[in-house]
Structures are given as structure tokens and as C-alpha cells.
Image (cartoon, rainbow, N blue to C red; front, side, top):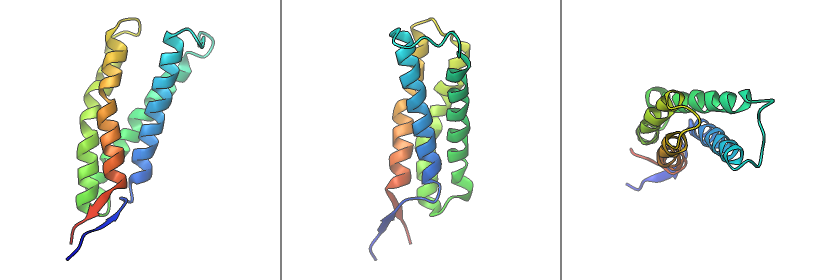
Length: 124
């Protein structure tokens, strides 16, 4: 029998994680390039980072509850490795070269989770 493609029911969570991550990278890059001065609202970068982590963790939890089951697990497994660089970021300091490199290390996994959640193959 043929396979049909549809997105997982957790796809909005993967999209939220990707949007929050992208917003945080954009803000961090703008601050590093001195395009934006966040000295009066430094908390914003931290708040978006927390939103990224919460959205990513919630999306990964779809491995347990998401439908279709196989596709949800695949998307969650694609995103899960992003947890390592996201968890390391607070311990690296913000003024080192490691901070943006480690932050960008999460990007392939966030993109992979998003793509897998959108292009899920429903196995029968």
C-alpha cells in the first residue's frame, strides 16, 4: 500500500522552536554586530532563549504523544541532539567565540526536526 504524507500533530511545536531559535540568533547576531544595543533590555535575549528551550523540549516530548506515532518519533529524534548545545550555552559566557559557535551547532537539528515534522510519512 502507498504511504501518505502529512505533518505530525506536533508540527506547530517544531515550528515554534525554530522561530524562537531564529529570533534569538538574529537578536544575538545584531547585538554582536553592534546593530542593536540591548543594554536596557538585556533580558530579551534570555527570554527568547528560554522560549526556544521550552518549545524544543515540548516538541521532543511528541515522541511520546504525537501522531502519527512513527513520524512524531522521527521528528523528535531529529531535534533531540539540539539539547546538548542549548544546555551548554549558559555555561560558556556571552563574550567568547564559543558562545555563537555552540549556539549555531543546534541549527541543523532544529531544521531537521522542523522538516521531519512537516514531511511525515504515515506508515500503516
